[in-house]
Figure 1 (cartoon, rainbow, N blue to C red):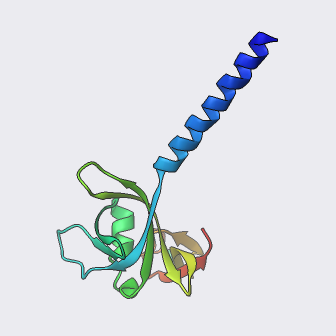
Figure 2 (cartoon, protein in one colour):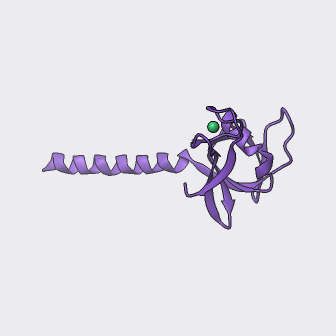
Length: 133
Ligand SMILES: [Zn+2]
């Protein structure tokens, strides 16, 4: 009987810890890009201020795509100790709706997630923004 009570108390505190961890895991920011400079980190202008973005190569190439220059972006990730925003996922926002950015080869029917030539036929790919997460 007593051990049952302890068990419940332990489970309850564990659930609280999990919630706290989930809450601190991902941050979301929305804004437009400051004019990109070659060799400099991309900067996102948000209502709360300017974020310096730390991105992997593919995400960075996508956000630098001139076709997407006028977009509003939603970035998700974590703030690093040095103040940079470590980006894990990116979306474009069109009419308030999140879109995934993809590139499609109409010849090979291959979808990729960064701009550039098709990995298969080396032809051009078309930008396609797909609604949803
Ligand atoms: Zn192709």
